[in-house]
Length: 438
Image 1 (cartoon, rainbow, N blue to C red):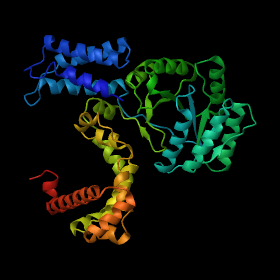
Image 2: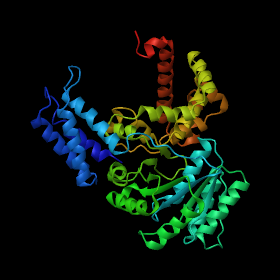
Image 3: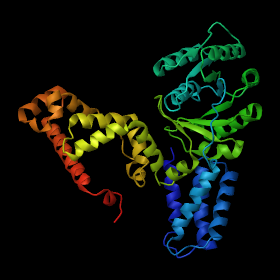
Image 4: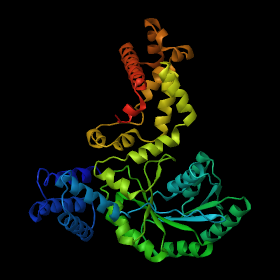
């Protein structure tokens, strides 16, 4: 999402690299480039100017320590100001209530229905709650069916009344149903329009008045840039929503909405979403996003995603197998499965500091592991557990089974052995040395 902005900011920082100290003259050129980069990212000029004025004032007002270069100091200041611009701290999400009611609003095509299901999945799998979805879009029959299908995918109940043409009644009836079924979260997917109109605003405001939601989330398509910010303002003036959700962050967008929506409407971004898969929803952390924009990576999120997928007991067993040099293709296949559950591979690699820039032009498909999996699936259980028995004749059979050339089988086997050797070597190292201690 922020690739172009990241490159432009990096170019701006080069203006001051090699300088011994920060002066009015050398900071001016850097600040000018930062402002241009923000405007090109579809950030309103007034916001971009106010942002860079703050950066300039803070940079000139600080003494550069001996251990820190002027370039490093500017990056730090810009990171802090970017985080502040996007809200500063993670925003609390209120799911207290009997049940907690979450009202979803936004324009048609912004991704409301998909987000509603993603949020239900998030609250169910990560928070241990029992959500119910409500199809309150009475104008688009496909929306009811879409929500029903998504609800089946994540095993969450969907309340709908296709013959009822009163959205307020549907929401009120759903609230009664949720209470009777001991559901602790009710997520109401409302109708969208192609543009802001009075009928739409009145309906969603009436739903709000009838059910008193704990959270009102405004869903924004991040690809619409500054238009999304203007739409959010119109909705907030009428609804006074509690937070923003940015969808389609994996699209070709410049990032202006993410950077300036909180400043404009005074409401925090609570979630960000990308892709169609039900597990591609993340809590929004302004500081982590600022780090990613500046190419610093996001190790905290990467570790959290890993912790969600990796079982501690399983990890201990795997460590023992590695120490005994017993790591086999079944272990490898299991690890691949867990990595895939963490999300898009390119996004994950981009969270590692310094890696994002080097892979930006690489086409890393979600199907990257399919060839490897095909090879492993073509092995017998005995071969997967005992890689050493795979001789030439077995390789030929595996080759026919997966449709890969014998040279590809050999290359994969060689890489697997190299990986085993590396694991063996790492496990011989004392933990202190592995952690960088002397």
